[in-house]
Length: 390
Image 1 (cartoon, rainbow, N blue to C red):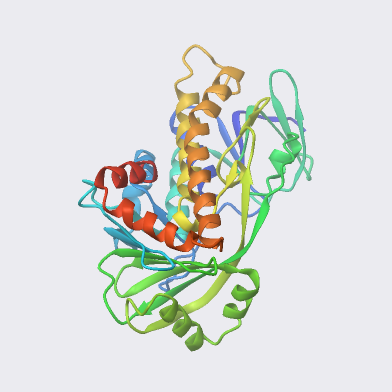
Image 2 (image 1 turned 180 degrees about the vertical axis):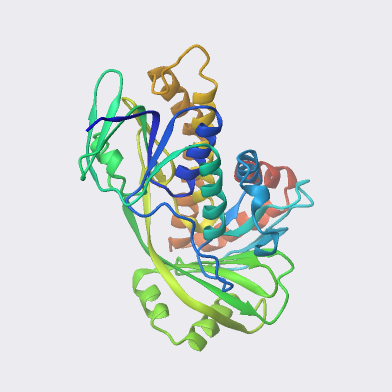
């Protein structure tokens, strides 16, 4: 059987993998995208179902360059024009898109809509797709890497990219054996109808028991909820009847939007932290959750992954006289450019999660005073917001 040759082989068709494939294909590279599941556009029923993502202006600009952003149905998107963060005492921190000279702090978009538009961009870029594939082995040589599939097919490329999630098979095959560390929390996600208008305001509450509750605005009087709670409490919430769960969510959010009503079934996923010493190896790079796992309290996981894809595609497209897409100099450049933003996001998300779950005497008042102090310093607020926006 003749091996199939490409410049770049991407393992994993999540949002970062799709975006990277489209960007590299548009830059003229021969790209193959391989996934264990089917690589097909999802159905688009009328119901609003989780998951949704908060797409930053920087990520939106990248998706626009791929032709995906402008193709999204605007009636299925909601801008976040302001954000209110409340601590577990009286601390409050607010952000406004107007104050930051932005159209929106973020846009709330359904995962399936993003996937459908990115898949269209992948097709338009001439990317070769292999869905329903079972990975068997990866083998490296000085000049290329070979992925062997369970059915005997072989794909050869100058570079393999692991975009296959937090328990990445590619990462393990390359010898990067770091394991995700559980937070001991589960994120409960659901869509709810609300009695009062949300005015495109995202809300977040830090509770004294370590829970983090977020409400994200959807079109009309609907919100998407993410409730990060201790595993046992999340299981209890998930077992509640729809009306009881909606009441608990409303109470936890201090009835900020009046009575709530559950729309569709809730879902849950375990929260894990992953920090790697490097995101590259010989002819291998990692993007998305394969490269890092952060707490969802800042809603930045997907933006980090899209940032990885944007930077890696840019580094390869700007390679100049280097014909080799997997050249060590290119991979080192990618790793350097991503090190600081990824480290900063780890510090913020992990630090806040641990700060608000700690119960040392006096710490509760100190952390709430810190929130309110930042709120009174516009320059500091802008400095904090910029990394998330870009």
